Image (cartoon, rainbow, N blue to C red; front, top):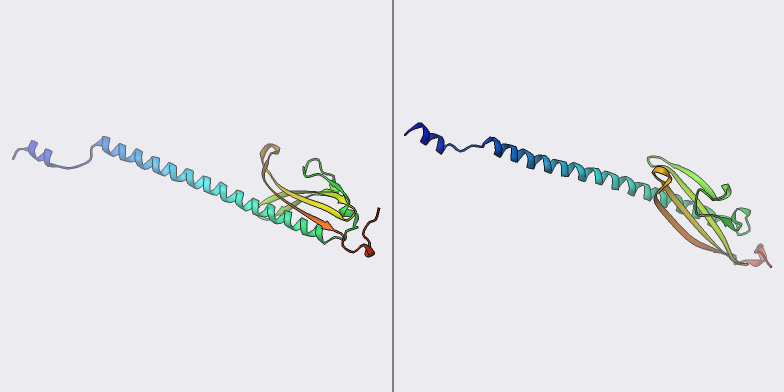
Length: 151
């Protein structure tokens, strides 16, 4: 057998085949890295949204626990944190999440009913809201003898 016949029988990779394999591998690794970054961002937002829901629910429970005639339950407030009066808003620090901005609005429906709406915002970049949680309930005064307002 000649040397040329031996070379034709050798199976191996050429430089071009190796470069193509490296390009395919790098493309796959970049896609996996991007997927991990998206997953980390989504996990962070979900964590913040859970915290916002908990803060809003806590504030709603505090407001529901107050006496119907408590001055803190006076009609007013604004759901936009930036324009809400100081009596109707709070910044709540949550460990591992940051600050959650919570604001509430109380609307007097009639002599015995008030709507309470609480909104918790996750502040984002450039003053935008990254996420939001909002709950609404109502309070009704059922014992007029013990201090329900009368008109």
